[in-house]
Structure formats: structure tokens, C-alpha cells
Length: 370
Image (cartoon, rainbow, N blue to C red; front, side):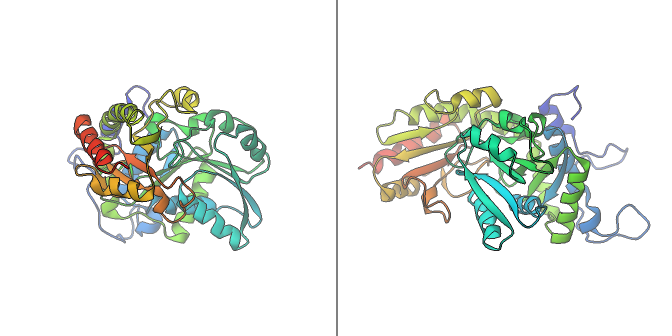
């Protein structure tokens, strides 16, 4: 990213063709192959303008170079694909269930051995840095919103050839830049905040080392995790307003978290910006903003929590997160998340009026109180 301009300006200006007569916005190019003799022959191998625009935008934000994928999980799978048989993998005890599922599926097939580490157990993470071939961090974690000592872990000595990756989806590159902290790889689900409109599936992986990036590109080509034309067009369009959306939603999220923390029908509120949050000091040290995700436990049982989800009117009862609309769901009913508190709801705060979101939450909580 050009150091002379702000993040907000980079998001709007990057990834554009500035040749006279070129379209102001990068148009979708729905073609799988090209006439021989130019820079492209086949899209899977040679890319497309939309991919490259997205990669330029995110790479500049992350402080490295980026590769676009068909989904966040496609990018994650490409990283795991680099591991040799018998490798050691360390993942957090609270992380995206797709990552945990992929890791344990590989272990069952004899590809690697998985160790789970507490997000805040920094001493164990530092130990794993000397033993593991893949150190997988996620901070803030999903959905308990625990913030680990990413800066300390990323700066620690690692086993030669080891890859340290940070899932940066919740923080986004605007709130946290893992590559600058010393990570080898940063991964984003573009489906979430970067796209921002619940209308696409995509992912992006960023790295600073050219050889690592080349290996990831080869994995993308051979395994076919390439992004779609329409998806990358929508992702670039969504990225232009990322800063505006994130700032608005973060301002709303802290207000909602404060109100939820004293609501009579909520027993626990988790948000890294609250002084009561156990990892608030780490969040304040590392993050430029506390994010737009809140998780809270409803007073009562799982059935009560389900009724809250069914009782909202403005907020959408839906999965995923990071979009313009607020969404809520009970995470323990999701496959792979059954270990979570049964009344935990994950709220993704959108860009609606804070008072309208609160009125909707409050009525749903009060109308389903035990």
C-alpha cells in the first residue's frame, strides 16, 4: 500500500486500471480462455483482472502479496496442502469449526497430528512454535472473542520451515496486520467483511515470502480453488466501502455490548472492547478497533435462546457475519460447535441505526424471558 495515502483512500483507489479509456471500475471478464499470444491463456493458470484487483487491494492492506480463492476454506485448505505427511499442527481450542474439521479430518487420514492450545495459553503457543510445522492462530476467536497474544507469538522463533498463519477474518486488515507482526500467512474470508453484502463466497490468503506465495498459487491451480468472476467483481465493489462499514458497525457494537452487559435477561456478554472482557488488555494493545461481533448468553436454556433468534424483526436470524445487515444465531446448534454454551448467541452488528438494533434485541429478549 502506498504509504502516502490512508487506508480509506487505498480501498477506493487500488486495483484500478488507470490507462486512458479504461473502465473506471474493473469489469467482470467471464472468460475461461484467451486468444494465444497475450499475457493470458487459461484463467485457472493465468488469473483474471477481477482477481488481480482484489489481490492488490488486500495485499496492500496486509503488507504483503495476496491470492484470491473460491472461499475462505479453499484458501485454508491450500495452506494445509503444503504440509508433509507426519507434520504437527497446532490450532486454538476456540476457532472456526471449518478449520477444526479440516485439521481433524487430515489427522484421521494420517496426514498430520493435531494439538489444540488455549487461545490465551501463550507459553504453550511459544512451545509449539519450536515444535509445530503449522501454527494456526485466530484472534479474536470465533465465537468466544478471545484475543491472544498474537504479537508475542508471531515474534517468537519458529521451527525451521514452519508456517505461522493468522485467521484475520474477525479483525480485518484494518484492525490487525499479522504479516507486520511477523506471521508468515494471513487469511481472510472475503465472504465476510471485505465483501460485506452476504452475496458471495470468496477468500484471500496473504504472505510476504515469494516462495511461499508461489507454493500457495500452485496449490490453488492444482486443487482448483480459483475464485469466480462475479464473486471477485462483487468483492472488489464491497471492499471499496470496508472502512466506512467497519467504523459504523464498531461504533454501534460497543454501545450494544454495554447495554447487553446490564440487560436482566443476559447472563454474560463477550466483546473485546468491554473492560470486563478477560482479554481486553491484549485487545487494546494489538487491535485498532474491537470489531463488530458480540456473543452473549441468554438467561434460560437453549429453547429460550432459540426463541430470541426467532423473535427478532429487524435483525436477521441467519449464519455468517460481517455484512451490512445485523445477523444473530445460536452457535451451539451448529455442527462442530456443540461444546459451546447452549444459550450463546453470536451477533454480527450491521450498519442499521444503533437504537433500532437495540430496540429489536431488547423486545426479543424481554418477550422470551424465563
